Length: 340
Ligand code: 13P
Image 1 (tube, rainbow, N blue to C red):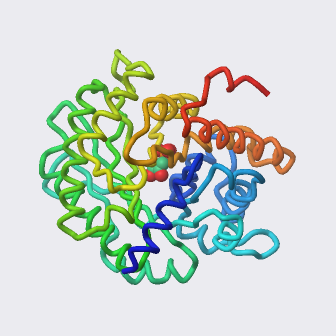
Image 2: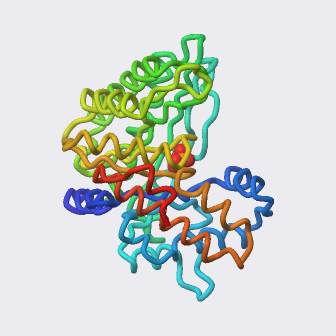
């Protein structure tokens, strides 16, 4: 384990103005996204779409890392350049999603657990050879009205995240640790804060117990936000304050960066929330983004699977990256959404 490599890669991903493009949808998930724009999810369509994303000129100023899916890490541009090589040549760190998806936690009705630890060391060795310098593992914590998540469900997920993070660091791969408290459901913002607090407390206790180097990892949490079905939705400032309060209590200052997931928020909300949190800074860690849907949903709409829409799709992606880059400094304004 080389601490210097881990620290410098983690820092590069969250350099000034920069965040992460999460383009690591599994094949079932990208099929859902393609269905919404009536594009067939063939291997070539998936390759072409990801090529459009990562060849967009200018995103290297705002994107420090791109998370890829197994299939994508093995793919190349039309002219034969492997995607990982293309990203590295543009100063963007290539990363890989390594969990194998979310399942029910046995004998714990309602709790979930992510699979993929068996054989992970060998998979990481191969991913490193293919050019990945960081990895991501998503744990999912659902909130419901029947006391879910349970204390044990939280502990089990924290343990698995720490096992994954230690395996990554052993091979000088920066782990992005993602415990996602879902925004599905009718829970209040207060309940989200209580659950997120318990989750982060458990995650950092396990990371510490597994000797994970905090300086050589990134945290990818949810924002503290009301469930989508909750009648009372928090205002932007309320979300920002609750999220920063929670993170300040539970995330060690040694962690170089926090890269939020968007979790189903609109692209504009995700940018606005990030902006409000940075406007409250400075914070001990970089406060940044690792958005999937909040960067890509408008791009898919612009592209619609048509080559004729290539320029429009890339323009849309660059705009979202620029606006999130501004939000990294607390300099975004909603009025910029409609400005040309
Ligand atoms: P969303 O931003 O769409 O939540 O995706 C981020 C991600 O990588 C989920 O694992």
